[in-house]
Image (cartoon, rainbow, N blue to C red; front, side):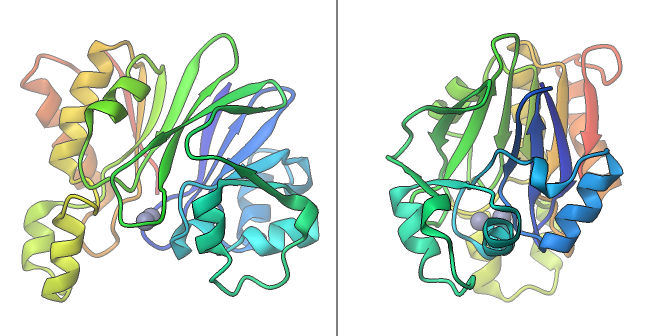
Length: 253
Ligand SMILES: [Zn+2]
Ligand SMILES: [Zn+2]
């Protein structure tokens, strides 16, 4: 099983999780055309997708789902509260037979990939992250979290690969151009993880057996890839964890 980030950041998110048999998109906050271009880079096309699993209803995660349902007949999975919230957005006509609803964080599977949603602290109807299991290894997508709960750690601990939020540098956010209420939202318990938070999470995940951490959902205003990478690398070095020796550290842009 592999994870490939097609696009990551506050402007739009979509990650491909795939095996030889099954291809799943986690979120689709980019246009159908952008999905097509990004999938073509690795030799796939949108028609290959067996499903899209949605973490929550914010625009940067769902903008493209209507097109994917209509043009490529891709089923879209979300829990019932998230689907209710998605319906309040104008995404064009959504094919009823492609709407797949699960309850809360109930596990399900698509093809040969088992999927376990888990709750995340974020300001949406019922936001979740996802763990994927193909019977050989586990991987997780964990972004859009105000802080790391014990439950999140329990769910993603032991995954070999984690796409982990590293949204902002706290200093850049504090002195940056965002209005005060938005800064408070991002820094709050239902906002987003900082680079420092990502470093702490990476230390935990490596101790639990993670081999590859992909930092994602970087803010364009309050972060940049080298800063996220260096902050996490420096943070874990204090716990004697070295990039290259103990893990592969990547940044999804
Ligand atoms: Zn969000
Ligand atoms: Zn987001």
